[in-house]
Length: 121
Length: 108
Image (tube, rainbow over all chains, first blue to last red; front, side):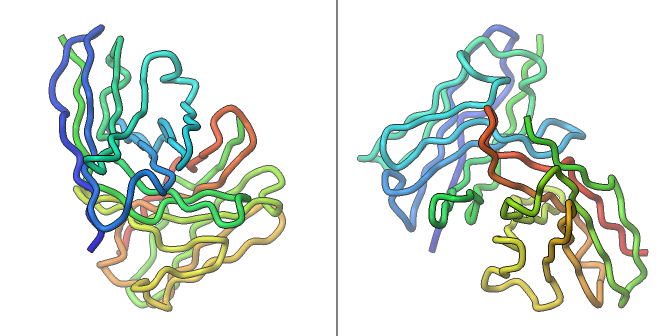
């Protein structure tokens, strides 16, 4: 059974840092395209970052330079290091597995339950 | 960056057909995927590659595309289909994964 379980969220002050984890079972993180997607209160889904099965990483313009995606193959876990957090980063963060058939498109077939990050003083 | 436009809300009576649209420039050249998100739950993929249904998704869900609009159609709607629905494409721009703003489906 495939499971993605996020952890590490919580309340953090503006300017602070937080690291989210996504523990995966049922498939190998390093062999898949893994992403973080977030949803701010009252807003829609927003893609945050993707890590390819190689070493490529990409970020949304809104988090570029502040967030870093990584993985630990031995723990089969995906991470999102978030620095210089802002109030507008407040959201539920989901990790998700990406599928890219023929390399011409990209979609998410498995999602975690999400973890809330609140940036507030 | 690429923009996908969805109506904020769609309302339909039980047993009727709901159609949720997703508009985008030259969307015909892109594959469109759809997600259902119920409150407090993770998003669920309900349609991929325009019109393919993942296993476990009822046949009542179908997808199509015409011109600059993709459509998710849900027939024989029931209260269990109430959710927010999001379309998504892959784009060559700076933000490659693009979601529509979401449509809240209400079953009257």
